[in-house]
Image (cartoon, rainbow, N blue to C red; front, side, top):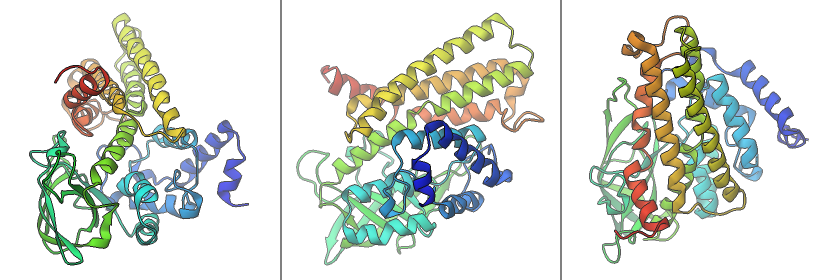
Length: 384
């Protein structure tokens, strides 16, 4: 039997212990509990260890190099990664492009692109948001015009996470101006070294160049790199955003912050304070409610269903809870909340750093204001 076959035979508890032990024995100690999102050169050692083990793409089918794990087993792995303080990989290829090509790509595209994600030859970033089309993604203006057996792309993307590290980008571009805004959008796979692409890094509040502006000036892309049919990219992009909002809505961020809140309260000598305990218990109950809601959407995914517009509830709930917990941490930290470096003797205790990391969570994957509009229009059927 293969290693994956052995894992399939284990109970969930036994599987968790195997994952926990392997992480402890193999995770690079120098990047445990990183203070910021790590770049490729900093995190690639972990990427390659997972790839060598065959654990890089746990949700992909075995015939395409994945583990074929159920969603529940994937969550166990993710829980153990979070518990140990593993850095987040540059994972757009693993989480987004791989599943997209498995569902909508051609056989040639799957042969070309999937193996290169598994080997780390291709590192992907996302070309969705634009300066005037962020949460209102359907109003994007980057255009792709056919020219023989190529398309020529012109326009600009922004908030392109890790674009300076990636060598591939998936791009939404307008290929037709007729019909509704959501129509006439196509989905392209583009090498970052194509002439005409310029990347300009953006500095974040925590002094990290995690995002970038990406410019396209007469960028020629083979028509073979169009995923699906022309003008039908919106449905694929919407499906990916739905799955992304499930990922962003996972209780893991809020749970991690709550664990750090307790550590901080104990260190500051206020854990027995009634007010602190009451806030902790309130956050803990909110996380329990979030976990129940999260499981509802995971059950949909297990049944092969595409999340509906109501998945926006999950993203709103998690990100705002994450922010409330980090705000409580700043109150507890007092003067220690002024520095973005961790507190002495514990790299995991970084109240200001965690607070800053929580700030953009209500913006990415569609701002929470837009998510509320989606819920009011498409779920509650309220007038625009």
